[in-house]
Length: 482
Image (tube, rainbow, N blue to C red; front, side, top):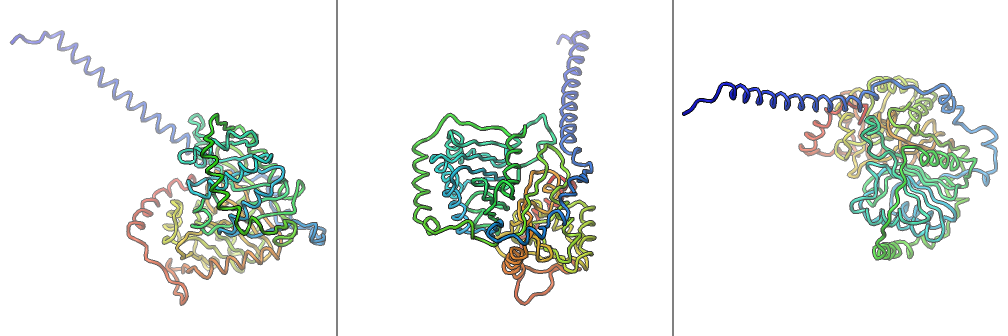
């Protein structure tokens, strides 16, 4: 056998070496690029951002309180607030508000589920647009888009001449930090004088499988809380992060079928024929303030959290209802310090048994950090999870909106709430919290175990769920992002 020529052997060896070197180099550069990109996503959220003095000045208890002039106004001139716990009746009430719209509807929501009531609601908006109402819709550009099974109704909505559809902060790989930002608001403004704010997404399950809360404010206007919400909505639309969506195709047969199903669902319902007087429903309130986070990509100063802190610090009684708490250690310490200034300080959240949220895992595995003699920690034991986000203070002030007691709501996502100064309304909300959540909750004792109860029993949690949430808890190292 003729031996391989030495020069050829060296050339072959050098070729192989060069190919291997190139492959290794490419792999290293790709790996480095991935690490760099991940750091570009995460590091902007590691800095500390505080609320400015100017912003804090409008978030103090004094700024959020009604003046004596406000309190003394005739009830007919005051804004009115109606509690809307999630239920079939609340959904029908929301549809009735759309049916009664004369000029405009502005709607923003984080997520739309692929469920029947979602089709009903968007069909109601299309029917309003058909009769000349100007409709604007803003959906989160990552989680809330009308795509997939919702694409047909999405095309119908975005093709209509009287409807403007926007996606907020679509995926942009050239804005790494912005990938984390979601539009988490849930708000509806009708005719500029009626407002719904709460924690409810859109879909059948949002109203029937969660315990959630919305508040409808009526008798408002440009100078009231509806006007404040309207101006925020305008800022969202005007933001560079919002993209107008326009479809060129419509399935007319599908549109007709959606309208037939909606008519069958709504037109013969009790709510469709009921007498509704928006000027007298609910209770008269002394003052309502719309508070929101900044509309930016990246980390934000904790505007809403600061308002919560300010009311906690100046109160003797605080009740916080949140699906979970997921806070950095400094905020947990702040919470404990604020609780020490209250005579009663209660946090109500889900239990491991009923939660369906990944963020709960961090709370569950750091729960002992929320425990001290000043905090009464209650965990809800019903089958359906608690999804409401609300606070009450001193039997006078209430907060209802999209704000969870977590890092995302504090610093990352767009969020909005209504802060209401009204003893009468807060009494209703406190009663609802007690009758719905407190009586069906167990208190976590100082040993991090449930205290005995004669009326509420804890549920066995499947081993699989415990294991999965144990894995989820490792995400606590990046709790500033989840």
